[in-house]
Length: 404
Image (cartoon, rainbow, N blue to C red; front, side, top):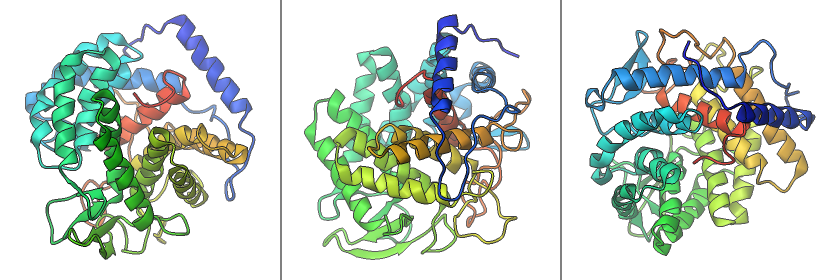
């Protein structure tokens, strides 16, 4: 196995950080008696070592010309044929891992630069694509040569904003008038970050407006969420509230719930708007209180058949979001609950039930579900599941306070 040259001081700090965290996690959730680190699991540092081995190996052996990894079939990555919403996650993983092992920096750059062509693609997912690649590149290196790509992508995303709706448009396909999906909360990070780096207040205002529109229309009173809300682009009125990837229009798609709790947490961190913190807490409480025994959600919270597939990607996204949220809430009981839930979800994710440490298998997490109703990428490995697992691990180990 590839051996990391961890700095002894960093390792000691990480161990101390986890020890302190665990000692402070004695609370209980409403339905779960969350346990501390499972002694039978791989350690978090071992998981990071395995991640570096797998992803550095792939980066060196393949080329961006081949495409970017998205999902696994027959124990091999399925590579995108360019301009997929997932293309930014692989370079994003490399940038994340470079925090631990700087020798990965060159490969992170190699896999980032070809995505310049994505800056002008008509998509709401430019945050996933460009902020995870060029954004991380700039924030970790300070190299201003990355800024023009950030500016082009942010201008592109900003152009999708509709004043009447108060949000950026999501999909351009389908029969919708002006669709806004809960996933789009995640892409606000590009607007928030660029508003600071490029000193552009309109980006910030658009991000805040979009978050409020999502809060008012996607978040239900009980802390659950709608997947898609369709608006009139002329009046801003709601036309319909539906799902595409969830079980039913009135159900709660697990990954959508995770996108929401993570997205509102980031929106609060960037804006300080207390309503976003309250929304994140509501979404998080529902997510935690309705998890099955092993703390990894089924693909939709409303499924009744226990043979239905899980979604480890939703678990990974939520674990990362919950860790951040635990540091933002003003309620010590919720702080304890969210931190303990984040640790427990990661414990489950890095157990043998979900984590594949075989060096011949390209991904880390198994049992992720992309689109169950569409029968696409069901019970497999997904690049973004690994991305958010690594992000959660780096925060829990103390390598970073917040995502870079």
